[in-house]
Image (cartoon, rainbow, N blue to C red; front, top):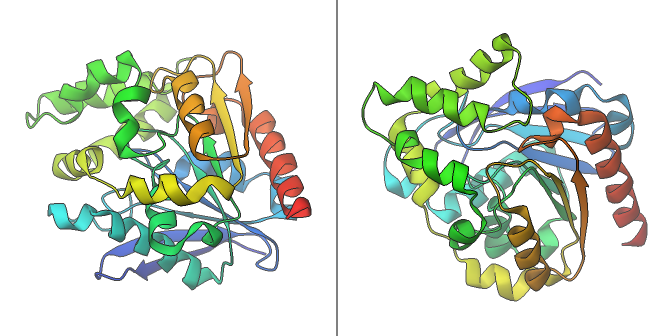
Length: 284
């Protein structure tokens, strides 16, 4: 089936850009990008014939990013809003118990699972895929953030316009183990520049009901796919914490890969995800 782009309206009126690809009768995966990125980071997944054969793929751009609205008030970045955005996407595309594919730590995308589980319960998801340094909750950023990204943080949220290009370049360079082609680097930097600094600040500093998640999420199957050269996430810490919350955590570590496995090593990443998700559904 051809891809379908839509502009959706979340509960508070925020417009959310979303796109689907594949057969809507198949089990669904919802892809959520990282801080100051866009859904373009999943192009390799949306072009993967085997993934599209077995799964219905849906991606959207978080509030404050890309083609979605970019509210500036702190209330727009409360936990309930992220859960409502996710549900808005699921409702619009008719998704039932999708897998949540989360990339990165800074944008709190790994933590959207916390928002969803706290709001709608663990049964709302078939499983969670932390692909590329997904922080587990905002409460764990201090334990999981790599010194490289922590060193960049003041520039990332600086109010000085002169810091924007330096912050964008440092952020993008640290997201991969091997330097990006210049055209791709400019595309990724463009996503950073397109995000208001205020929105980036609220994403990083928002709070969550992580206690609810910690009490209730243990039965949700989890897959971690992480690059060993990740400069955003201390993945060994993240994996250790995940295993105290979730009963079933499988891990695939990739040599020579940084913070973006779905881009740096897409064929391997997609194959691992496809096999794991198929097995989870078979054993459900």
